Amino acid sequence: MHFVNKIFLLIFLGVIGALAYFVGIPFIENFQNNTLARQIALEISTNEKNPILTSLGSSTLLVSLAVTNFEKERGLGGSFFLSDRSGLLFVYDRDGYPAIWMKNMIFPIDIIWLNSDFRVIDVEKNVSPNTYPTSFRPDLPARYVLEVNAGFFDLHNIQIGETLMLVDEEELSV
Image 1 (cartoon, helix red, strand yellow):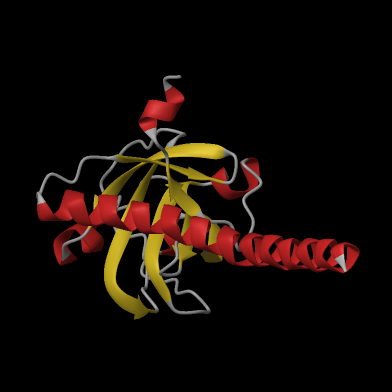
Image 2 (cartoon, one colour):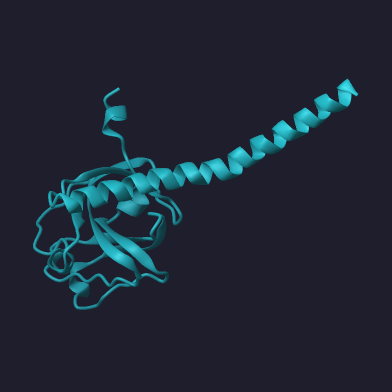
C-alpha cells in the first residue's frame, strides 16, 4: 500500500506541475501586460505622460503616449526625427479599428497594431509620407497603435503575436 501512495503522490504532483505551467505562464504574461496598462494609466492620470521603457521582441523601446484626440490626430506629423529606439503609442479606450494616416509626416514609419493584451495583431511596414490621405487600419480589433521608424519591425525580427511589455528600469541597472 505504501508503494501505491507514492505513485498517487507522483501523479498528483505531476498534475499540479502541469496546471501551474499551463495556467501560470499566461497569468504571468497577463500580469506583466497589466503592469504596462497600469503604468500607462498612471501617466495619463497624473497628466505627465513621461516616456515609458518597454520591450518588444528582443528590443527595448522608449514610447511616448498619444492619448487625446489632438495628440492622436497629430501623431508624429511634423516631427523631423524619431530615434531608433523610440516610438509613439496611441492609447484608445476600447477595441476598434483605429485608422492611421501620414498627414504632415516627413519620414516613413512602421505602424503596429496591438490588442488589449499588448499583443501584435497587425502591421503595415514602411508606410511612406506620400500615401496621405490614405488611412491604414488593422484587420482585427486593436486597442493600441505603435508607430516606429520604417524597418523597425523587420530589423528586430518582430512577429505577429509578440507582446509589448513594460521594462523594469531597476533590472536594467543591475
